[in-house]
Amino acid sequence: MFDVISIGSAFQDVYVFSKKFKVVRDSRTTTGTAQMFAFGTKIELDDILFEIGGGATNTSYTFARQGLRTACISRVGDDGSGKEVSKFLKKNRITDKLIIDRQRRTAHSVVFLGKKGERTLLVYRGAAHNFSSRDFNLNGIKNTKWLYISSLAGNLSLLEKIMRYANSHNIKVALNPGKLEIRQNKKKLAKIIKTVKILFVNREEAVMINKRAYGDDQGLLKDLTQLCPNVIAVTEGAGGSLVADGQKHYHIKIKPVKSIDTTGAGDAFGSGFLAGYIKNHGNIQKAIALACANSASVVQKIGAKHGLLTKASKVQKSRVTIQKIK
Image (cartoon, rainbow, N blue to C red; front, top):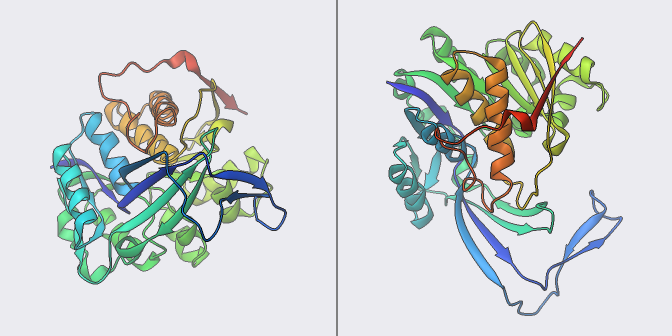
């Protein structure tokens, strides 16, 4: 019996570092800035780092470090990177339920880090972008109390199928949909969201779902609560987060930390929240405290996993301010 099974992507992340990389202003880009390096030449790297990433491996690692019995379901290629993902899971006592894709390679991302932890990614989604109900054995999830589902590359039909199975087997679900899911059929997504126990979205995704003004905290929570009557968490990086539990609304702020790499911060918050929720029998404030501490810790290290807290880590509640929203 598992406490929680993570379902989502598995990546091989490659971090590259060079003083030759420059960030310049460029109005032609969507962000107003661009990553620049000379074209048609050889660029010397100062360092290179290989890490295992992706929503399923990131969240399952938090659960394992928090002492929960956990497994990871994802898709990887029949290649060296896929074997590295499997090796990582087994090393960290996470049950390997990986699906091997014989046609596509394991997903990869190349990460260029900025001075303040901001990043530019080159992403190849590969096997992680090809979830199919044909190779997804639902019987493999029946012996668990919780599912933590991150992006399934927009496959709402598969998500719907998993939710039906979970609901019929009394398995609780925490859902962190990605933009690919949100951009699909809104009515189908709304129907799915109604049955989840905990919903995680960032503020941009919350606006996409509800079409509310970006800064309308109460409006966002009100609309999301109508979709998901249980627990909702809306994150905004250093800007804090909003949480609703069906009765009360909270605005959470955390004391700033020096951010080195924001990769995996959302996964750290969501998995920290669920771990705290499970271990503290549904106590929202303790779940929030662990979520904030976990995400604040991970951004102080390079990679999506090195800063994740263990069950022995002290959670500094004084760093978190929780305000009730009327």
